[in-house]
Image (cartoon, rainbow, N blue to C red; front, side, top):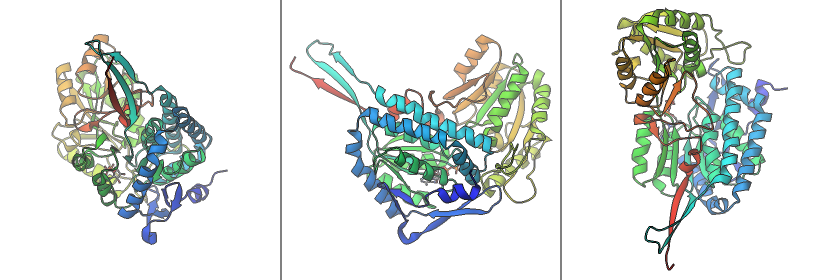
Length: 486
Ligand code: ADP
């Protein structure tokens, strides 16, 4: 039996440093809020910059021994944690729903997705390879091997509180790196629960250190400037990512950056329209648009735009809105009042520039941060939502006449994370996918995320890839040993 109060009280609320639960210096605390009610769920430790340094000290102290652990053992810890996450899927999903707002069914889906990264990287831990070659002149030999990059700083966002953690922690553990992780201040409970699970599964003290704080910038910057951490992996906004890259320049720290997106969703005249509407619902409404992969702009061929808009509107209308713990709820709250303000502003801006509201377009009265599922048509290119991330349940539709015009619109952004393409014409599908300036393409598919595939963006959507067979490389250095005397 899992109760709301039960799952919250079961979480350890302190910092996890060197394998010990430790209060923040000065016993400072910060409050975690339920975005569906605005009520406080609990208080947790509010880490100071000194606490951050203590966490880094612990990660640095544990690095050499951890790197020397057998890869199989590292993999088996991950495998056990995968199983434990799945065993405890219900209660972890409830905890996530309480702090983040997403409906229980989606939270359960995220626990499974998060666990998948551990299963995947459990398998990758024992596949770290190298090479041996004869030098071109025949007298020397090349030995190439991979080594863990060293202590890592990991920073995760609130929108996928568990999966964005396991996507970094999994490969770091598999590669033999130690780490300090700082979850988003809005959703720290999932990460605290995860730390406890990893410890139970045999992760040695100091390998994973968790610091929660209300002062992310104040805690992280000194850790970057310190120089002992050798890698930063960040998922969050492009604005913060740019700032962190500047800080990392000071110590030439390696970085992985999963930043913002502005995903175009193209529907050609030869698309299977019902499939396109299904895909649009997934690409837009997974996490109610609070995802960097969320479709942010729909470009639909003028000959099918009316039908597509009508069908999408039918699907968006009447979706059950409410607290994610309630049965049947599909649309939970946005994360906070800032998010509501941003979505409202972007919709007002588009409407003022001539966009037509087919459904929604307003907040929901009462407590909590709720916004109605919204469809807009005739959204002009100069509307702010054409270039800014909406991060909410709003689908802006514009039309196009030619493939070139659609691609030009799709690529007219500083972002390049993912694009969605619906067409049944094979050559067009390949042509458009290749010309899309993004790291990922959803071709007749509304979701691209998969632990076994390389996730990441180009342009200002980021650097590096997470997941897939390249995901572990982000946490490894290549060492080349030149062998002479032969
Ligand atoms: P969002 O707008 O989605 O909250 P952010 O980029 O602000 O995205 O947050 C993503 C993560 O980055 C969170 O864990 C947040 O605490 C952290 N963060 C925010 N500002 C900074 C900063 N200046 N330095 C380091 N981390 C930061």
